[in-house]
Image (cartoon, rainbow, N blue to C red; front, side, top):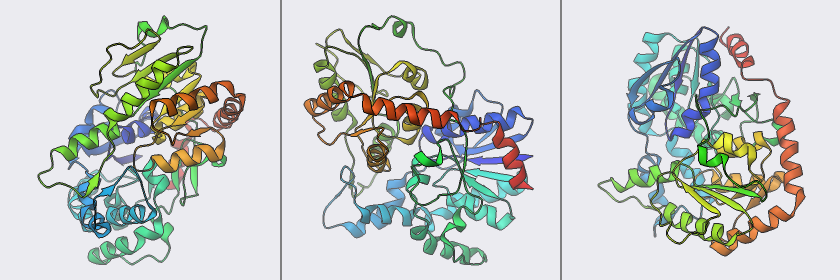
Length: 403
């Protein structure tokens, strides 16, 4: 079987695809990943062919014409609204899809895939699949979870008309074969795409991942708290800083969040706290000895020993915490993260941090560490996760879909 995979956005989108692509390659199937230059390193240690053919995907730049409809004032992405979500849905199938389609379609024709696995925000792969009569499925991502097919359908039908494809009446025509997920249906984060092929989340995402030696020396006679802000926001801020024309949005400041997290960590003097900065510069002078600051750490491995995870609420991080039965305190920034924070609370897996001050974060951490309820619920999610089939079953399922 020949499998084509598209990846856009941040490295987290590619990392979510890795277990699936490894299973396919390990079973002898040919896998081609079509992605951006920046995301090539995500796949470099795996037995897949990678082609850096797609332009960097900047959702804010692409959405700027639609975001302008909300103007009067700059749109504040730290306070998401339903109107903003709807506009963001519209842009993913807008005219900006054409440059991606112009690249992807000839590549796909040459490769001749039996099935396409696509980034959740990649509508060019949807159109390519329809033009070539190939089944396609979105892979796990926060965007797939928040995507409302009804908002996408009108724009997608315009693109179909331009290509001579028949219009679709069913919004779910965007994913006619369902989607791939790594969480049980009872703990799903998808708002609209209900049909899923669900497999067990793995803790072995990065090949050769190992904790640093200093982690082996962390105290074990006190709770261990881990905090991280993810990679998407720092990268998006860096990308938009290079734009010639200012965008009508105001992004959250990851450095500000890190300062608050470090302030909270300093207050939690009865815990050990590990803070991952994702490379964002922070001032660590004067931090007490129970706070350990690192640029990066193999998160899925560390979470196996963590009592509480303070997270930005990216879908990868949430799944990894569910896999290890780790309660969550979610400090969301943008995109799907606020919705994920609310869903975490609905499921009883943790708390949405609404007071973003150091004291507010520390108070939530203390409440959680004193309450056995979230830990018990997180363990329930972990057991449900462990009851899912392992990722190798996806090979047979995809073969069946491909016919």
